Each structure stands twice: as structure tokens, then as C-alpha cells.
Length: 512
Image 1 (spheres, helix red, strand yellow):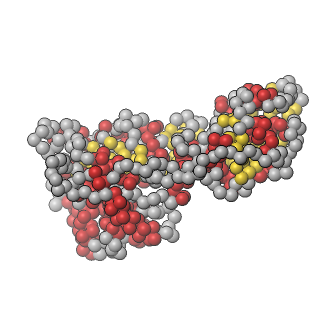
Image 2 (cartoon, rainbow, N blue to C red):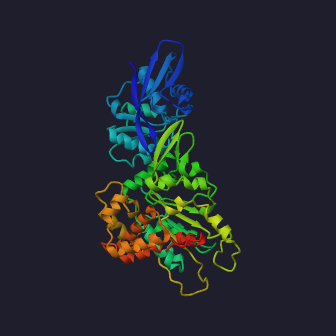
């Protein structure tokens, strides 16, 4: 009768239980691994034989068949080695079957001398184990701290196959000298106190952070766009435990956890170069791996020199910006990854960067051509578009505010939103409101509606843009502690789209 032990596969950012069935039968000595495993899975035969012989066990000289069930789910990676080795040892009666085998799972790659190497994606696997009632997991020593982030599951670290067999048989494992499990990330040295002047853009940046709105900054080289963007994470609210686990799972799957055994609590900040490919930004590759927008989940995606990105690459952001999720389909796999991020872009106003000053020699045609690198739908998705001007470097009385001061305002507005949307799944900030929720939570009085109507008549905004104006106004009201949106809030919101208005004049608009 075939032996059955448990391991895990990864689908997107979630783990899935895999039954590793092992059977031996009379016939020519061979090893078959079935169940839609990739090449790394199928190469396990040589690793298994060498590891078992190195550990003093016998590799059966019969026909061996491994089935990774369910067989219609693709499996990738080498972490099935330990489960297959244990299954074969049980099937060939070289070790006794433990009583709690049906509540035990195995993760780890075997080396030729039977050492157990670390694996990626352990956190989502252990979370799945807890969900289905698996109480005990044997895995590599270097993954123990990461696995212990999940409470309620017994985690045993194994250095080699012999030690795994001993633990399975009831031997008390040696206590591992593990460092304290805690939170990741060093304290940031960035602070908004370094940003002098720029009161207007900082006010709108606080609005963007408070409501989770996308922000586009347009200004000449050296005016402080990148400086401001890099400091935005310092004023964002702390991540909840659920958000931290989501981010840590993504980084675990991608083998990007630099501090093993720590939960990521700092909001991610990703700043890919403008020559990034569509696959690296959105996700892709043969096995549909996550991209930068997923690594920025619950944080900030900063696209510096956004006009230099490929238009095709930028347009690929359109669907994730709306759905906060990206689904990547490939021949070898289909995975969905969360992508709820705050998009921050920075660009020059014209090819030379000095539009509006005497230094600029760009023609209207060149300026229009340059700005057309950003498609209309992408600009439409930027809730706030503000010009950033140079400041007098030698002025001694330039105002500035620290990140701590700005964060107080952001936290105040976010707590209002958290309370308002606590009974609505998937909504945590104003930027995520759908059309129906805007009607419910953002009612406008006649004066405010009239003001919005006048803006529409003049600039012919899209329906999406009008909704964004309302959501930004809702955030402004939250920052001021107001329950209702007033015409003053809407007026400030309508002043948030500088690029739209400038483009209107560049293209010769004459409405109203």
C-alpha cells in the first residue's frame, strides 16, 4: 500500500497542500515522479538516492513511483525532496510509521550528502498548514524562524535526513541557537525635515498619503521630487498584522527576505529604473512570478522619470491600479498577486526640464510629444498632479516640517477612514472607494455639486476623474475632521490636477 506524506505547493501568494504518494513495485529499477512537477522536481531522483545512501539507508532496487497530488496542479521547486525521502523510507519499511503522520508535513531540499537546504515560500506554506489542521512541520534549520512567525504549529528544524528521521521517531531535537524573532528593517534616516520650502506640494503629498491617492509630481531637475517621494513611507501609518503577513508572504515566495525569521512591518518602497521591462514591473516569467507592483503591495511604487518608461509598460499598470490585484497567465502557470500600492511618479515638464523659465528652448510640439509618453488613461489614474518649483537655496527662513509632525495628520485621517469602512471588506482608505461607495460615503450638497459641474463643463473631465476629485475632497475633509464634504474641500481638490489643466491649454482648449 502506498505511503502518503504531506508537503506544499505555491499558487500565487498562498500555499496548497500536496499529498506525496510513494509506492514500490516489482520491475526494473527506476524512479518515476508524476503529478505535473517541473524539471527541478523530476531531478529529485539522483538527490534522493545519494542522500539516502549517505544517511546509511538503502535505496530500493525496484520500480519506485512518486505521485504529487492533486495531479492537475503544477508543482515547482526542490522542497519536495524531504517528503519524498520520508515517503520512500516508510514504504520500504526502513522506518516505522509515526502515529501523527497525518498531521505532519515536510519541506526541504536534500543535498547529495543528505543535508537539508532552505526553501523559499515557507511562510505561506506554514499558514496553509495551520488552516488545514497540520500541527507539525519538519523543515530546514534556516527556515525555522520564518516558520515560527505563525503561531499554533510545531516547527522542527532539521540539519539532515538522519535528524529528520530521528525527530519523526520521537527523538527530542537539539535546541537550536536561534536569534530573537522580531521585526525587520532598520530605522529610516530619511525625514521630511530635510525638505525646505515646498509647502504646497507637501500639503498635497499629505493628502495623498492620508487617502492612499496616487501622486504625480512635475518639476525641473533638482527641485526635490525624488527627495519628497523617498520620504513618503516615513509618514504612512503602521501596517496591521494582516498587511505585514501579506507583504512578508510575497517576499518569502520571491526569496527576498533578507532578515530570516522577521516580519516585515515597514511599508515597502520600490523604485524600479525606467528601463524596467513589463514583466519585471507587472510580474511574469515562465512561472508567473510577482513583479515590482506586488513587491510594493501595501506601500509605495515610485516611478522616477516616469515619462522615460516604455508606454506599453506604463499602460500595463492600468488594470492593477483599478483592481489592486494582478493576474499573470503563462503556459506553465497562472497566479494572482495582490497589488494595492500608492503610485508616485516624478517627471520633468518638458524634454529639457526647464519649462516656464528662460532656460527652456522646447517648442510646444516637443512639449506635447514629450507629455504624450504618458497615455491619457494613466494620467487619468493619477489622483493628484502637482507642479514642484525650485526654492531659493540660500534663503534662511524656508519653512519645513518633520515626518513625525506630518505623520500625526496622516494617522488622524486614516483612523477616521478605518472606523468608517470597518464593516466593508477590502476597503481601508478613500482611494479604494467604488462608485457605489462614493454615493454612500461622499454625499455632496448643491453648492459643492455646482462647483464640480463647472469644472466638468470647462475641462470635460472623465467620470473617473470626477470620482477622484470627490475622493480627494473626502480625504481633505477627514484631515480637517469634517464629517461632510464642503465646497472649500472640493475647491482644494479641484486644484490638484495641474497637468490636466496645463495640457488643456497646450492643446488649445477653449471650453466655457
